[in-house]
Amino acid sequence: MANSLTIAGIDAGYGAVRVLEGVSLAVGAGETVALLGTNGNGKSTLMKSVMGMVRPSKGSIKATIDGNDHELVGRSTEEIVDLGIGFVPEGRRLFPKLTVTENLLLGAFRPKARSVINRNLDFCLETFPRLKERASQLAGSMSGGEQQMLALARALMSAPRILLIDEPSVGLAPLLVSRTIDKIKELKEGYNLSVLMAEQNFTQAIRIADRGYVIVHGKIAFEGESADALNNNELIREFYLGA
Image 1 (cartoon, rainbow, N blue to C red):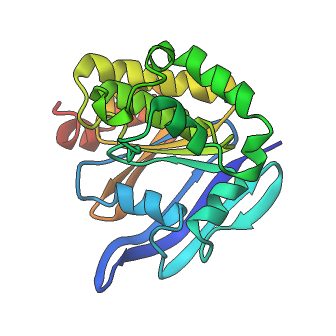
Image 2: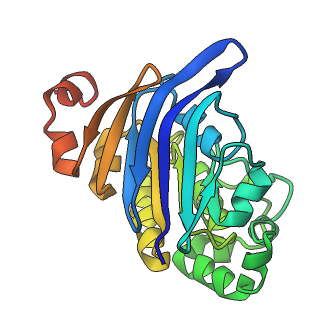
């Protein structure tokens, strides 16, 4: 069934500080959509708004999960995750003093994920062999790349239909960034996910995105209907890709 996300006219911020103004975007069923922009332009605030961590002052966020429509504004983060929306936050946010296995199992707390916990665990360990090798290692003692793998796998353990990923390349060496982006594509295809990925590394994000949006100062400045449209836009090439 269709799993999609529609954000319409969102205003959001922190106290008196408005970060997002009139933001609208959509993620269709089975799509990978990139939310592109440099630091401080509102990517993380938009992700947190979808997840109920920041409450918009205006607008609507609707998710279609297995064919059923849900308004997300006003729901708690726990309720949103329970609907089937997974989140990989910027900075990974693991439990550093718990093992790899314990972090993964905590990702499967939502009721609908518990019945498929063994299947998802097997899939995660097959997709990320390094995690299997380090199953008993404390998460906080792992490298940045390994921690990013664990954060992605933990989100998958919640059996999501829609997956939000915030800045997966932050803190990683270029080679690890490329591998991480490839894994996101693999997870999306393996589980038929709809993915919204916030990223400032344009070159890597465009490599796997079906299409994308550019956010500047809290507003959508450009919508590209394909990766080529993003890559060939003169403003983007000049100001974001260094062309």
